[in-house]
Image 1: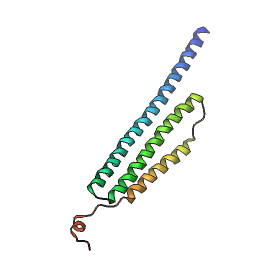
Image 2 (image 1 turned 90 degrees about the horizontal axis):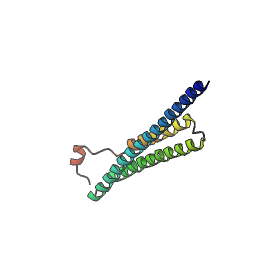
Image 3 (image 1 turned 60 degrees about the vertical axis):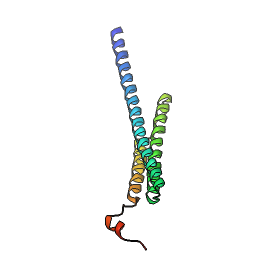
Image 4 (image 1 turned 135 degrees about the horizontal axis):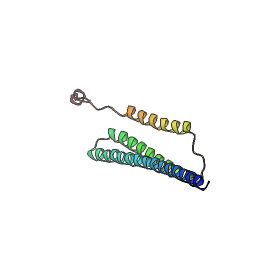
Length: 132
């Protein structure tokens, strides 16, 4: 009986370790994605600053919107990871998977809308045509 209880305790301990490792790796993956989004967002914001310094105003707004949106998405992921860690510590139930899916779809739809609204670059013919 003692050996059975020890084996059961070891199995429960191993399962808890695997679950804790899984949660840790999931949080680290979210933090990694957030860090990548922050780096990309900073690239867009630096591109906007560089374009503004060059005196071209049009693409600045698109770069600012894209950089700001990516930065907001990264911060949302970051705080979601922190909230997940706190919920796990307090054993508060997380959001239902459908809600998380809706949030991700909304962020992706916003990014797609921003990409679609970006002004197109002028072709060589349009650049060569004098404006009145």
